[in-house]
Amino acid sequence: MRDPLSKQIRGIKPSGIRKFFDVVNEMPDAISLGVGEPDFDTPWHIRDEGIYSLEKGRTFYTSNSGLKELKIEICNYLKRSQNLDYDYNKQVIVTVGGSEAIDIALRAMLDPGDEVLIPQPCYVSYDPCTILAGGVPVPINLKHENEFRLTPQELKAAITPKTKVLIMPFPNNPTGAIMEKKDLEAIADIIIENDLYVISDEIYAELTYKEKHVSIATLEGLKERTILINGFSKAYAMTGWRLGYAVGPSEIIEQMTKIHQFAIMCAPTTSQYAAVEALRNGDDDVAEMREAYNQRRRYLMHAFREMGLECFEPYGAFYVFPCIKEFGMTSEEFATRFLEEQKVAVVPGTAFGDCGEGFLRISYAYSLENLKIAIGRLNEFVTKLRKEKEQA
Image 1 (tube, rainbow, N blue to C red):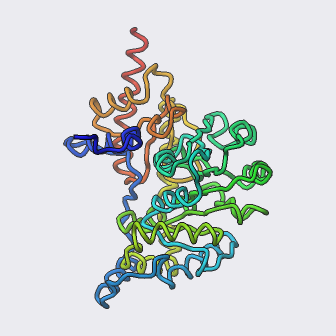
Image 2: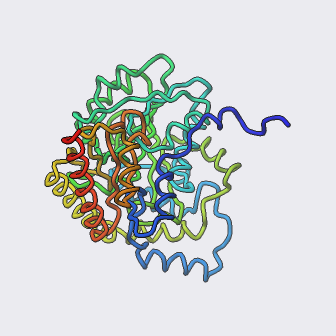
Image 3: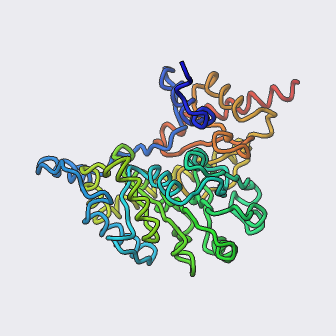
């Protein structure tokens, strides 16, 4: 029989995040700090709205681009949070999570051979989605000494005549890095001068701890070049509801909607009604969860300082990215031994790009109680490794 599989899909590696998650599920007394899954339940008033929509028999398809009420609320949210104006009828699409938005944005924008600049370390979907859309992923290796921010020099060096899209993964998964307004302004002219488009993944926009998130779409000349992607999974603890959205120039959104129309039809109706409630009345819930994450973030930074583990201070998302280069092990080796010996799962930095070597992603979207147990085990493990190094 002929090979039933595409050569392209065979060449794409599976997610490095799930590997450790799957192992820890089979390990008694293990703690996972590996998945970006909020430990909060979806706020009750949001769940209640989803339940009510089912009780009212709202189990029909919505329009392909999404429920009108939700698209209006998305526009209202972006207006009050970023002072951005979008036409709900032409410039908004509701998707099955932010991941679908990333996928269909790339498929709508790329021709074969177009290059996509991907600052790394980053979310695992950008690279394979680029390949599946016929594009060529071009990594930009961000640096620890720059707090994993994208610099003008790094951006300029990566641009070629084939470059079409820059992905902006900030606030960043896995590093927790942010781009402040001054950082965005430093690269804005380069984007415009080189006629680039931007896919700005802002799924963690509400989870910043130094200052309020600023979207690159707010800068002069960038809104018409930017597809802004966000969703409900992280800020509202709605991961299983599978709901995201994209806003941007109408000609791009129109083509994204066409792909969505044929592949998906529409996002889940129940989730869309719940999301309307989240945007209308969920600000206090977000503030409460953000404060809890910030408390955990501060706890981890203090714990790392106490054990002498190097880690720059992240100001976004709910991840820390400590450096483990002192131990002379790869990230994979460290994470594997840590799991086997201490029953704690973290993710090797290399799951997010080659430049993640020497780092680990630790999620603090978990209870403070579990974090304290896990960090106690990490301290024991680090102490053991240092003794081994001394005796070698």
